[in-house]
Image 1 (cartoon, rainbow, N blue to C red):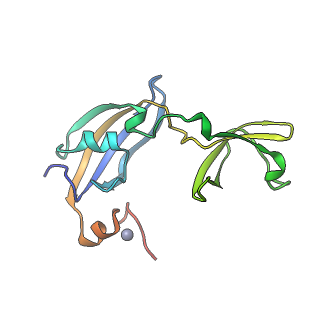
Image 2 (tube, rainbow, N blue to C red):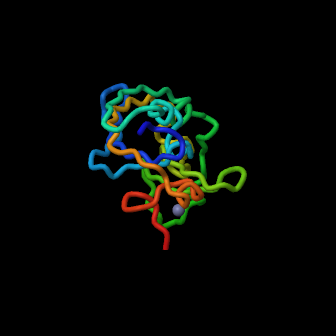
Length: 161
Ligand code: ZN
């Protein structure tokens, strides 16, 4: 079986930046996704298409095919009083905020200076070139329900109450 749309794919992977730092890794068969459903970044999905179970691939993904480029417009200075007074604020902390169109966005605190908190709405991996070493552990056909939901069910997938 080869990786194509409507298949559930299990991969083991190591993700590194260009300085050889490990950003993320999964080696216990717990990461699976539904191919063709935008569950994973486009660059990785494209690299996996047509591959077979047991194959190893190495792929370098530019930010445009990964988590996007960094946008300085997403960096904003916010008054300290916009946060709860008893909330500890430190660089690197992440929280959900409301975007310009009311959508939920994840922001990261960049700096805290006196009464001003600078927050960065870029994805933490925006602008980062991603180097994946991947082993394809399993490929199976998706169930009708998984296709309808657009994600994987089962022990390592999505759970519904
Ligand atoms: Zn579901």
